[in-house]
Length: 549
Image (cartoon, rainbow, N blue to C red):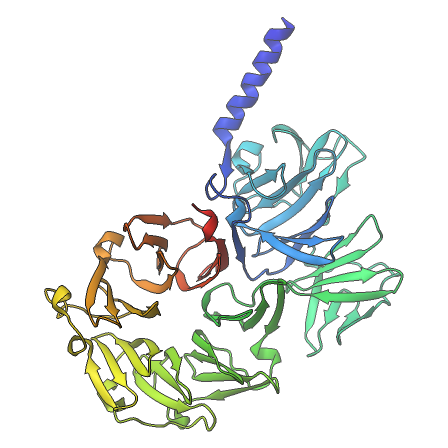
């Protein structure tokens, strides 16, 4: 009889699990941090302490992790690790089982490894409304507790099974993680007079940044070592040292999750589309995972605009957007905006490329050449030919400017000052059946003495050594998707489209699709050794692509 009851209970648990719990992860072939997404964090909603990390639940950026022994942030946990959403309402570490729990807008998540293998329970299977608001999560010696405001939910700590709803918990010793209080958190008197470094001030339940802007404190947590963490509505975090009576500010993540462009190197300058808020530009030292933000409303001469392209010269950073050209002097730390008065064509700046002394500017209405030092237009004579042309991409290759437009692909020889239609360059016999049909040259990329050009019919290539054009593939194989970016290794080509990421084997022409929901629309790609960096409308994603073999 006892054996029957045990089997019956086990069957119930299995049935509940299979019917109501979903394993949420990109693919079982990947390790948890083969994919990492960095996003704008939004407000800090919740804080909890684990064995090794302090975990922060954020409004937009998933779960942040601060390593308590190394005193630095590690890669965050987001949908790339299997969370059901990047919007975290509450987070809690259960020290009895070592399980990390997180309440998102889509369900209750938990992981025994605290990294991947996340399990999601829908709120409908927890006796909670579909759009329930979970304020905090806690645990006793035997159970997990959910604070839903007007009710408390008791859960089995292993399987997450609902064990009842209470108006008041039937246990007293519950260890709660911190919750978000946007109405204002009462700061204990003993820390109210702490000093704050880097020009910040603490005033009641607000921090005041060096530019005089108020940031409301939304979450408070004190660790077992008496360290104090304060989270704010803007995503800034402050670590309080009780012995030094000092708070130290930290920032993590991007100023803008809709990434359209980033410079390439050991430090990325990441920019994107701007919405109703003053979205800024992020400096990201990716090897150390350090972020610095530049916001228009706090930075002199920095305009609030959507940025669609960027490049880095020896002395400056250039950002092209819908209001003109934004420049940042790296030595002086000074921003400046240039517009049509400097000879720029009208419209939104879509692409840029540089030669030794000039930067070529492509917009939705034409093309121009700007001298790097004087910032003045230096016409070449071809500008009128491109009046009202949409310049999708520009690349400087072997002292030639390759110009991808909505009508055709052109090559301008800088030395001879001659403009060519691509059909006049080299041997086009292998693409002669279609080259008159090519339009909308979206992306141009040079790799290993071969120039690749993506257009609305497919991807074509030009061998610089032999002078022959070839067809790599037709876009019909990708549902006629727009190719926004290309990246190459010796054997593989990565394609970024409006609907995801694809990898092409250039020798055998096998295709692999990475159409995971956390990727979204791909705008920019860059390969640095074994890392593929992916700029998308859902953030900046790091992919350890060489492990996928």
